[in-house]
Length: 588
Image (tube, rainbow, N blue to C red; front, top):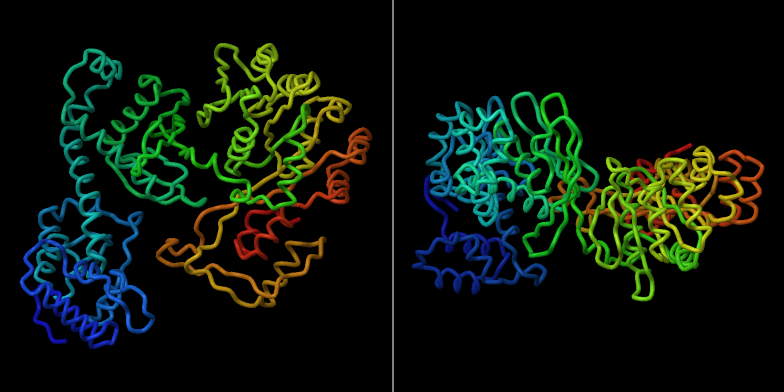
């Protein structure tokens, strides 16, 4: 269809193009065109056509706005772009393009290189703005076509953020003079009126939180650099840089977060821990665990996001097989003894323990936990914060809990001999004790206890079992493809499962990458587990000071399925890929 430059697209043009391509019927196209013939509202024509819920002729499904945008991009020979908010560089381009200019022409700045500036538009024929942007940016303009609803949404989010940051930077000279941070604390004590700068800090911090919740982030990193600060999100194990802010803004942000977490704003030489409870965009309560660390260029701050809904997920959703769950339930329902969960940081140990304790915390049972720090406040049981500065350690906490008539005790982590011995004493005196250790696999936990100085006969007396776990990324349900396993994958499978000789599946799923999973091929995570139940054979090996290899071989003989076997089952169930399991599980 011929169209002169610098004109806005209309509903009639879109409908006609869809009808000519036999995507919708001629009758539907005429009805939509007639309905909006004299429309003067602000809603974009692409959104209006999509709102009609038209049926596609080819498959009978509803015609979605993203499909219309892709079709229009093909028809007008303009590159289509699905907007990934994590990759927008609005902060860098905000000085060149005002929000008024962007809204007038329906534009969203995407990125800028040394030679080119990329701008998303929903008007394929309107190029009237390109010369002005090229002149201001001193770069070539690259137009891409995008969903008008996404452009409108991110215009509001990012230009508001950019405006707040600019306002803070413009007042940065005054802020930077307050080198004595006690003055900042004193201002709030005097209950003075909140300044405009304070409101901007609030806006920026709130935006980061809401944005992180929206993007399914598990951690937020605020990292100081020489001349700026970087905001990064961890999503499905990988870190993504989402924003870069001037140093004066970064300092104000970290101070606000520390105040909300009840940390000492003045103290910047020592690490601190705290927590904040906030709300997600859907109104759901979410807890943030705050950790600060002094670095060369200032305080680095990490916020771990804890979603309380994780606690109500079933063990099947966490990745437990029926066999794993049966073993775990048989151990956690014992009246006394000790259970250990092992794995590196970020392997889901806390989620497993909380889910287990929440299941066990009935009105008839007294469940107590000792944590450093309390990662998620759970009303179903009694939680105690470890405070080493006042000699409230794990060992002294266990000693105190023994006088509190507990049935089940959770010890956040066994770090030293005293804590290990106190946990074992608690298990010997009729309590069920669950705790964590940092080891690579379940049998290694026994060696770790021996290294801490715990006598073998005490381990044999109280230990019920050990569970090691990891988190693996699950395949994107939208783009992953199923295919027959090839020769290279068969070799990978044999290397992964050697010496267990499990037969490889005929078909497996592979990651592809799409807009839903940010081209990674994965979306979400699930656990893989190995559960070692203490048997008489294992106790005899411990008594003889056997090697880790002896323990592992005996555990496998006694029915333990190693992590790689659990991972292989996830591959066979088409939940994850060979590459992902090979990445997470150590190959010997």
